[in-house]
Structures are given as C-alpha cells and as structure tokens.
Image (cartoon, rainbow, N blue to C red; front, top):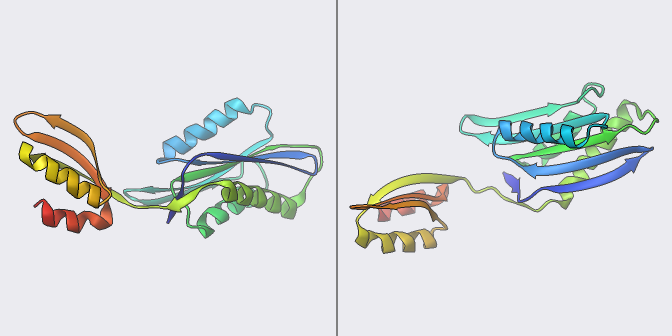
Length: 186
C-alpha cells in the first residue's frame, strides 16, 4: 500500500469544459467528506464535483466513489480505478468540472475523469505506507535514555511524555519493528 505526502492540483480544458483535479491525503472518512464540502464552497459555479477515496481504518479499508450527477459509472469509478490500481490509501481524489457547453458522451466522460485522476496522481509524491503502532509505557527515569536509543534504531518516536514519580510515555513505531522493541522493553 502507498500514500501521498501532500495535496497537489492539476487542471485541463477538454472540449471547452474545465477540469480541476485535486489529490489530498486524509486519515478518515469525515475528513474526506469535509474536504469535499469545502470544495463545494470554493467552487460554487462548478457543474460537478466528483470524487473517490480509499481510507484504511481499524475496521478495514473504506472505499467510496461518487459521480455527482454524471451518468452512472462515468466519473467516480474511473477515478477510483486509478486509486485501486496504484494501491493508494488514506487519500481522496476530487475532480471538479465546469461544463463548457459540449457534451462528451459516456466514453468521453470516462476518459476525461480517468485522465485527470491519472495526471494528478502522477504529480503527487507517493511513498510506501508503513503501518505504525502506538504504545503507552511507564518507565523509571534511568530507562528513558535506553528507550530513546531503541526508538532511534527502530524508526520510532516519543509522541507524548509526562514526568512524575516515573516517566509516562506514548510512543509510535513501525508495526514490523514491534517484536524487536518488545525484546528490549518487556
């Protein structure tokens, strides 16, 4: 699985219709839908705002696409097929269309939406998705330096710490490094 690092945009005119493609990382379905709502506010004159997303959740992969009034299967699905084909997760691709007066037909719409999605995906910086785990630990002060050393070796990090009688930390590290970490801190 792969993810995108940051939002990118691509624009193209196809037979007088203006298509604006946007790719953006997102971590939840509500976040994806909020982005779509924001785009509706930013583009009130748009004819169609079509999207597809794939988001990894604790309950599995959530996949959705929406044609936004275009003929069924001609808009959201071609976008989604690019996400699926490239094994992208935790992102949304949105294509905004301003109708230019020339009808494209079902095949033309499918090609246009699919091509805009492909172009914006090609612009994005794509990296491998590394599943991370979060752990909470309570340590003696003299164990903190060893913890920091181990996390550095295993590409982990301390995301929260609280100093009291003992040190309470919340850490994150790649899931595949969890067994090695547990050998050190049982």
